[in-house]
Image (cartoon, rainbow, N blue to C red):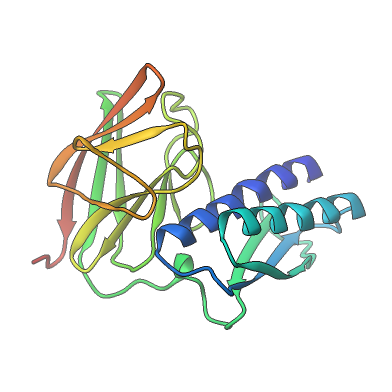
Amino acid sequence: MHERIVRHAFREAVETYCNLLTASGRDSRGLRVRVTVTTVRTLSPETVRWIHLAAQDHVRNLLPGAEVQSIEFPVRAGLEAPGHRFGFRSTDSRPDEVTQEHEPGAVAVLTLRYDRSFVWPCRIGAAAHWLAVGRLPGPGQLPLPSWAAWLPRGPLLLVRNHRGRLDFGRSGQRPRYRIRVDGADLRPGSPVGAAAAGEIQYHDQDQVTVLRYRVDWEGNHA
């Protein structure tokens, strides 16, 4: 377990947590966040200090009015690869919106297509929370292949199957990328409903990457 890898993974994890919480519409004012960093062996004092600073900076900057209440560093020798795991919970002892259980409802199948060689179906259960779609590993997300270099890294695009409809959302991460869904700009806090089929555009200055999408449903869907 290389501690530089743990630091990099933690930075991505706390950014994803804050962005998904923001996209859920939850008011962050007064929120107290508890963080758990589980690793296969004890981290060095330097890395522990770095994680404390990174958590505090991200929560303060991305979740206005929130603060980190505590960070725990349990060690589990038998932890599976990659040898680290991160957890984020609020102080009310209830799971945050980003980790809530699924609700009753039909499963949406979002199929993304770049060209003939890249066709990626994503099954999305009914739930109130948002999932990130993109080149990123981790729980609570819909990872696309890391070799899909035409897509930007990180949890930029969010998706949610809630109350019988599929919505796209935008996190606050990497704002230089402009995302459009079926011609409409996607902005943090302003989701756009998915059509039966359409397109998603990633704009980076003069470069545009287009993904075609299709939405199908499994089970009873009104």
